[in-house]
Image (cartoon, rainbow, N blue to C red; front, top):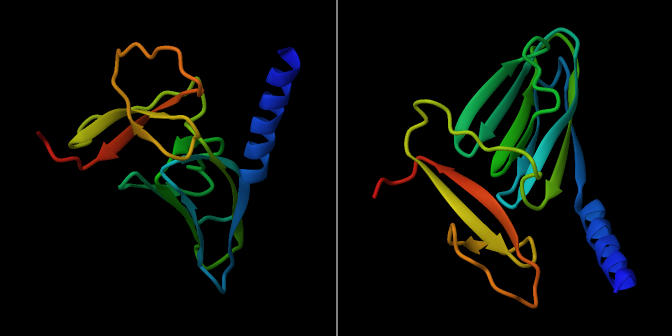
Length: 165
């Protein structure tokens, strides 16, 4: 039994390692609109490093809400968030900058919290469940899930600009 569990865990870690995607966004004086990194709704991302010598902006659209970070002072190095999101590096026209982003499939990292800020408008919070970390369905909060042949994974999904009931 221990061997089967060990093999199963090794396969799960190998799957995640194979699906992780390091993306580097680059801007230069000649190209001030850098590439855009996209984080799907079943993924999460971490900003791993930022090298912005003289300035520029990191534009983050997180679940429909826009955030702008002036670099290098407002650099959100180490920021982790779940998708859907887009990240764009925008140059200042004077110097080159780069940002490295790690995009990984799966639920938001354990031990992290989701926050709904003040005056965020209508936000729908949904508990979701999956048996394969790809296909997600709405779960029932407080429900007792009985013995099942498949492992179940849970995540919390936030939807901004939701319609009020």
